[in-house]
Length: 352
Image (tube, rainbow, N blue to C red; front, side):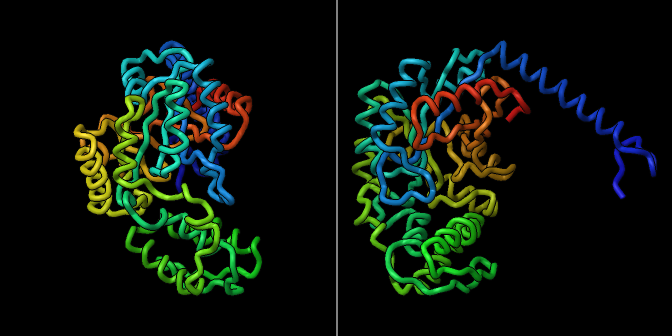
């Protein structure tokens, strides 16, 4: 039996709990005072600017909503580049209501819909690219997975197969069952898999689906594709845009060996340095997933900082530079976004 330090067998644990609670409260108050003196900001995370026929991952914000968000941010906040936000946090002098805008993945709608609106409001943004998909004729792996399992057309009544060493047995007779299987059964397994295992799993699921990819694919949503190199070059020419690496094939880095993780980061980094002519300042973990090995890989590649995802935490002087938190932007009114931002800025709990 594991005991708290100083605890005796049979002794109630209430005292130890109170001591720990009191220590936690003192730490949170100290963190709050530090944050209050040195300011707090937010990093927003977008993925797509589009109106897709289906969006099970909740990645899309419509162009109309995005413009409303930008109008709010440009009028109520101090919009910084991500590098400026990092430098302000490093110096412990974050401007009041500072916000930085980021995008992950590299969908073409970032160029076609997002860039014109960013230019209209003069707001900078950092766009993180999964570079292995640039010039790819297909889709990002999670979008292909969506089409294979939940796209239009007939599917088998059940899915039974081994994926990544895990046995899958799930009903798929109805649209509701297929959506549940996609979101709650298969995607979590693939998210925790290596790039090779993801591709092997997709091959098995293609066989299961009978070659069907559904009408919700590229034809049904033309902007749901990665950018080409030419499009990426056009995007990089805007003075408002900073590009950053997001690995090559977008695996969760916590599922990778150290060597594979380092290769994923370095290949993405090299691609963007060759394209832009300058080394990228920061890195974005796919899905926001990171652990000590992932952070070591980002640090070893020479990045100044790296961003993850954490819904309830602002950027402060206490933020760790290889775990900068971001607030995910979703399809919601500017009032709802403002309320979430205010709640996050007020949060002064445990350091991120």
